[in-house]
Image (cartoon, rainbow, N blue to C red; front, side, top):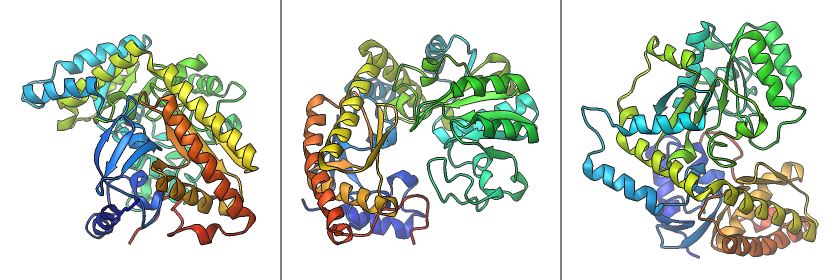
Length: 437
């Protein structure tokens, strides 16, 4: 397989675009430095065509978790094309904003109002702004990854490693005002004692967390967080930008009998079209009228139309059980093949966000790079994660696992013979945030 144009374009991009693009998770260096295709011409279902016309099956992050139905879903695209032809922007408002709000409120009977944005990071910034405005308090206790905005990166003003355990290590708060130091305080998932210690020593007005990502809640963790929020009168925000709509149509929090004050969605709800939602209790959300929160493109029509079409299709076709089934097949396959080849791995995550990690200490990142390299040569976009879509079928999973079987064998032999570095055709992939040039 010849991959030439993508790496050349990426090298050019790094010279004229800071960081090469607008999203860390799509950098070539996060997958396979110097050899990753980087750019696509077409994407349909689970098939991706790169600039050299190579065809790949995407068994990786599916547009960073956005395309829950698969790439270029016909039903969603049809509605979007209609909206484009009828005018996607105007002086008047899009009536679909009201329709989407009614749909989301029907999925969240405890909520009373919804505001919208176009990206997850800005939606979380809106949610935190509203919560702070409602409580008239600055300090936020948080757990998990919540984007790039100042309120979140302020955690690394106190210690440059505060965020390292929350998905991406090495996030630098350069440019974040020093006066925000101490306003965002992290705690570790499943360690309720850390949150208890935070509230004893700080006047916390907002508690933010991802209800689930790589690990299941233990010892009634989510309900204990909810109890603490109610005890101190803090606004409880669930960030379901990544987890939302995958285990059920709505938030995964519903499976754990816990109710937030605000829940935030993005990624999957528009199947690749930009849309994010802040769904919350009426008395809290209404404070948004007192704090200036406003942007032109939050009113653009396509996001609303795409979200309505996506959510309605998920409801009609009962999409989450399919995602769970495919994810469980993948997770079971990884475990069985690791056992077959006597490889040490850890398998994590809810089934639709299946993740595996090699367990060889400092060599882990080189092993993941080798895995990506060998799978790419076999026609797969592959990494340590598979974000399952409705377009993934059992035949895709079988073919994928057949190739994983072969690649796991190569990796085990490389470990035994201490030849991992020798087999790599380029540098080891980056693990977190770092400067490219």
